[in-house]
Image 1 (cartoon, rainbow, N blue to C red):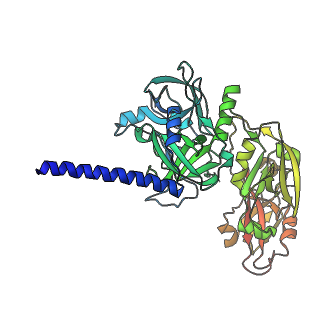
Image 2: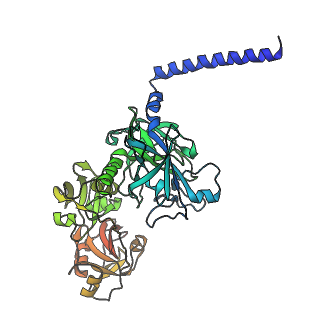
Length: 495
């Protein structure tokens, strides 16, 4: 027998073995209970589109928005290699620098048969032209109907004569860690790429000032540049999320990905269709986490909840009687475990509607009914440095490492304080206050949730301070107030 024939037979034998192995693998999968995603992909692939945005000029990032890559809050400070959040602007493979400046690729999916398509804002933001490519290879010009940068959701519209295949919308609120999910999209320009994984966590807040109103779905589904705006499916073939961000120090997938919940995305779609913009509810409070020092100072059982550091003048919270120092435990029956839990819930509340806020005040729980207001669309928080204070009557605490002074009416007015509110820090005299970041010119508004308006009042509130005791100060700097805990390192304070 000739050598070529032997090679052919060997190949046939290998094919037969491979086929048998494939059947055995399928049987093993069925017996193990692992899911088969083929049906979901076949039904839904036609609903997924490839999005291409072109720019005739230089693309710029709007003020207040994240650049394509930026530091994650809370990540290690490493000059050589900092952990980065990267929104994936999928680029054509091996593009020239000029092409990179002019083109952004992403994914999207059809939400209604008349041609409405959902994608990420960062895929099409500022584009001069947007086109989408369907599974049947048709390329259509898309109109950006509207977008919301804070939710990172954009709504497109194409004219395809109707009867386009549309996705089934699921309920992201029912997701649980451990559930199987899969993504379909165009990573690196490879259309209709399918990847799968599980839900790693829900309600994940990324600490981003750009998106404080989104609690993301965290998954280990491999997604990369070009997956942005694509759908995340559950095992019933329903869309439960919009793939949006990855956590990476390389720009590529490292095992952690984030999707916008579909109920948030569809709320944006509805508002854009109904009124052309997205409104958000506003409570009007500044929040701060419950630190270990705060838990110790207030003698709390745990750190669940968030403490109110500021209450906006004329805000919904002020009208309802919420005060600085209150601890918010729940919102409309949903527990608040950390500060980041509250903004997404309030943001999704329709302005003008009633909400029940459970607070802890002076050790007692109470429910407060609040009429939620509408957040201004151009709202910006401006922080200013506190002005210098003129010396007046002084008091202090050597243990806390600071001295305080009364404020005159002009200083209070400049700082936006009410008459009789606050006492100024005159000097930082010790390492306790210095390590806490306090400065001369800061204003102390509360001590252990009790207002202070003079040096005498501060002295009264701190007179029984003992070694190891922790006090919780509400400190105002410029237009921002924060709770700061100070622990006395040695004996009883002296003035």
